[in-house]
Length: 444
Image (cartoon, rainbow, N blue to C red; front, side):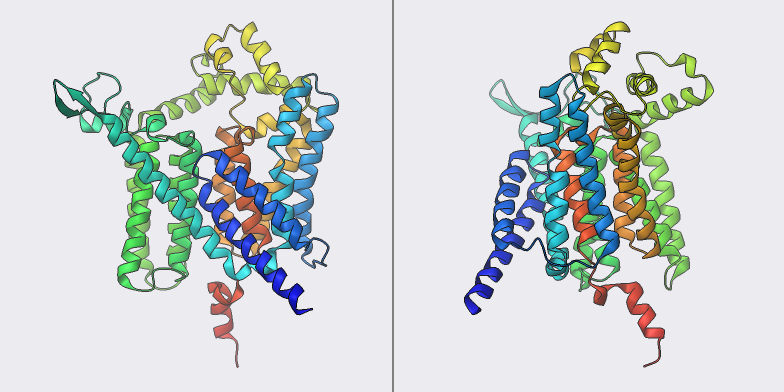
């Protein structure tokens, strides 16, 4: 019996090490996560821990939702005209089954190690950010008449510093800065890192001394600057939402409410000033205003909103079953050709909204399951005061609203991995501040 236990412990340690590496690798090139996930699957099968009795009923329901979402895509392939695209989509969404399954059955064992996995993601984002900044710096240097000159501008606008921050157009902003992923995805990764650091600081799980606490606060500030430099609307909205939400939560928790109220006011003012200075955010505001004031004024130039309108047209005609797993892009291409949307056709743009994208593919059943994946754990998180899970779902709800993020591996792996990590691995109750405060009130 002893050799078997020793073997099992070694396999578990290897699996934990692989999870740390997967978490760390997500901000980098997608192939790192692919190869590490393949190894994780192999070692998880070697551990053979899939058929033990699990008593967590709610979590079983969430697992079934993920499996059902994947099964709907498989069913959608049967009436899809573009079988090849459907097969690619099904392979792409394989993590939606594998990651929840593996983490569901490893939940109890990983309870004490959860924070290390989460912090490895923060470390990965820090290193990826530094690499992006170094790459931007290197690209900004050029040899002119035998002398090295520094010029970060990509277009000769001769922007002032404040104009540059408002409009971008240099090596240190938007797509030029983000060397591993689309800036929208990378900015969401960093926002989640900010959330994790904030929560661990509040719970006193990191930053034991004043020096280390100051370093973590500086890291949070660095990440906030990176989100702005990435110039992605999704990231900016998500960051402001998280900082505002967490500030409100802290204001009404514990002592020093006056001080915390001051911090809340600073966050609100800073958020309004920063977002209000950003030209992309201003354009988004005018587009949204146009929807409510006069929808008929929306033109092809309002590409994202125009595409959402096209997507709704497709959904109306295929509401109950969708067009099939592999046909959503082809249906969009047909309408792009009809409406002479040349640029959208060249770029083969998707719906830029995962809820619309899923409804186009799978109809009402797909939309309902996707909404349930968000809403049911959110209700449970509110009941249990699980602030990290609540904020994670809000951030990804914003992310899904502006991007068809399950069309890319960067979105599928990130969402399924961290959703499973936060939902299927129980919290260490000994470190739960709500449980601790409750226990203190109970008589011994």
